Structure formats: structure tokens, C-alpha cells
Image (cartoon, rainbow, N blue to C red; front, side):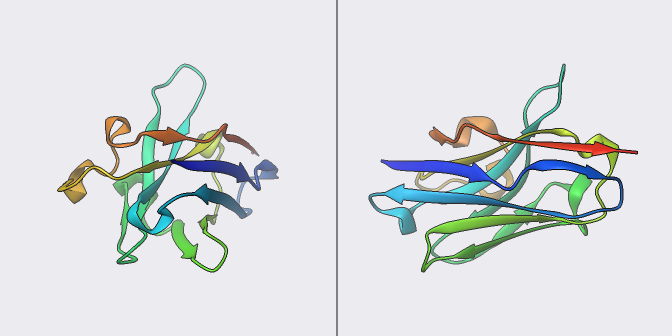
Length: 128
């Protein structure tokens, strides 16, 4: 099983940038797909970006395209989420998650149920 530890969150002003990190450890890291999710107070957790480790293919929620970039460094077993032009509505707890359901369609990579392992989260707070 893979274990996930997020870092890089913080408090920033609108318009700023952050890079979140998700360090993975454990067996068969390369067989997983990893996703970034966020949950704002009073709202459901939503998927924002995902990457298939073996192929490097990336996917984004429409709401974040152009501002969020997911990437990986396989030498460090780490996935990153670069967030640019931060908005107050980006304020949320951000979670990294991993899954490896065979045959999963790309359109489901933003779904919570597709993931089996979750990190503890890192808080992002954006002030206007």
C-alpha cells in the first residue's frame, strides 16, 4: 500500500502562487494514479487534478484549468500541484489521494470513489 504526505500549504494573498507536494512511499508507486482534491468549509470534497504515474497523463477539473498544474518527480516519488493566480475561493484543505482501479475511465479520475489511499491534507488559505 502507498502512504501519502502532503506539504506546501499556507496563507497567501490573492494573485499569489503555491506549490503543494505529495510524497508517496510504499509498494508499487508506479502502478497508481494520484489525484489532488480540495474541500472548503461546508462543501463537498472535489477533485481538481490527477496524474497517471506510469504514463504521465494529466487531467484537470474545468474550474482550475489554466491555473493549476500537476506534475511528478518519479525519482522522489512525489507529485506536485502548482497553483497560480490564487483566488479566495481556492481556500480549502487540499488532499492527495492514490488509486489503482483497473480500467478506470479518465472521466472518473476526479471522483472520490476512485481513490483508496488519502493523505492528511494541507491547508491553503487565500486572502483578498
